[in-house]
Length: 427
Ligand code: PMP
Image (cartoon, rainbow, N blue to C red; front, side, top):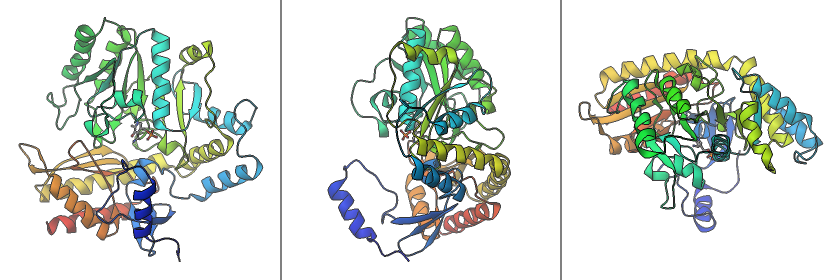
């Protein structure tokens, strides 16, 4: 049993010694002390079904034994030396990661987070094209560093500092978007940004392939194909942010961009790549990667042996345990059950997603799509009481984000939906 500091003490210390911009879930914040596959345990040993995976980060499962073992074995030999020396863990991992990509996406840069990955991608896009202008999507999230904050288009995460040379296109959101599922009209907005807002050339376009923080929003079918054509005609490169959607989570495909039938020029990833290790990566073509060789690009911890060994183990677990097919299977069961719930509760405006990347949007009026903000907050607390942890997102905080570790089972999905059903019946 756990006999470390209790929630009150930790919370007090956190308020005293950590920055005031931190936020926490739940009126009474949870003190999580242990994790095992799809479960988390609090200070009292109470078990919670984790349907948010530390913000979509834990892919293989909390403390997956294979990943732990790889980290431990590498740590015993060598924790760190940097890429100024050779080490096989980094090259083995890069080779395995590159093998997961189509086309000429074969060169890897390792970093430590999603923001860093997107910073680097943006830098390469600008150097490669000689342009500065970037286009991203409204409702998108790409990080909290100053450049990636500019790409992010949700005011919750933006501070009032210069956010130059970024254009935010109309979001191709089939549920809330002004053009419904009409990809062509949304793509036209990207063309308009180029025609009216730039000198006619752009550095690139970046988007998530299913928006995560924005509330599990899928892009209108066919959108990326049209936009990639438009952007490339304007001299730009196309960047897919797979920080939340990669590594088999969408079920039908290993990468989210594949669900739209495109091949990006640059792909960024983090979170699921490390199962909780601070790890990110940028994968691109040899031609684009070479623009950084004009100077020295260095990242002290990027690709360190421990994270690399852990990352390689994650790739192997996803393959060995067939997690992509599993995500498709469990995800379709979950979606079917949620859609069934939607028939019974008016408050469920939309159920969407793919595989284990699912969103449930709550509205007080289905026609007006008025965000059911207070109700979402109430249900969120109720689910926690019942032992289920989900995420919350969207600009109005009215979307449940269900993105569990990939070892989540159909029984877990049933438990989650039953808990939601019960909570909604008490509203
Ligand atoms: N891109 C996406 C799609 C994300 O969801 C996030 C994090 N929520 C980031 C980038 C930034 O990642 P990090 O917090 O590791 O910098």
